[in-house]
Length: 343
Image (cartoon, rainbow, N blue to C red; front, side):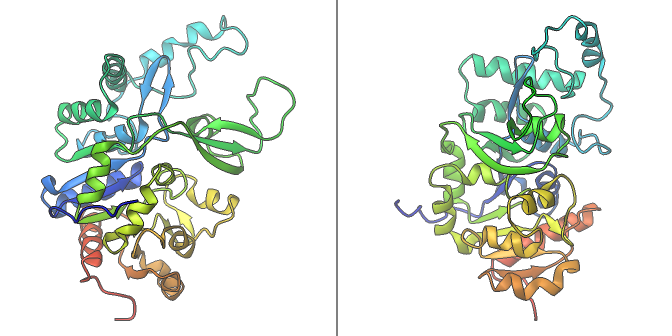
């Protein structure tokens, strides 16, 4: 593969998943000019429900940066109502066995439905997901570029120990979509494998952004199912590995646990170490720096033994000030001005 062209400007590309990435992007917005920022967002979680095209990570980031996210749930819109979902109760009793019509396990709020209506209609008109995402971004006055990782479907498939809702009575391991695992099964079922299905490629605008940005940040998202789908696309790891000195990752694991979601359990179930060291092992080929929280400072030497430089700063973004500080330290670290461990 040919080496990417040298960075053209001082832009910052942020490889992003859901809630953790959204909070990181909000911190970056407070630290740098929005025109410098572009988020390349996971679409392995995308699904179709009720005939609608749904992009959970893109929507979570959009709503967060528009200051419209529900702060209690961390997803969906503030002051949301659920009348459409409640109205589906009427059809529960007459739905044939095995049918997935009028499913209620995945909540779609009344206001949120408008986003999915728009996305679905535009995709059916022939627009690319990149084009539609930019239109939705502009509608919500989000000041940074939001880029889906691909314009084709690349689906995250999770092998779970058992699916209690399966149609047959055999039981045992079952392959389910990520949303089935995460929402319907409430990520409570042990996982034995993750794969990515679909003949997809890195979207052209996303590729150009990753090739030309001066700095690439891997947000504190689940390494396996938020960052993994992007890395599964042809040529992405080679692109990032070729730019390794410009890439910095923020650990989503703090004190051996994920702040939100099942990342810690998934790491263990899939044979990895649920610690900052485990994260470093997953990223050492594509990133030169790992940012970790002070609670994990005792593991800094082990992180550096993977070949990554370790930078310590608070990573739990409980306030806007902490999020901004994390953004500033993260950017400084990859520029060579962050404080390495031991100095």
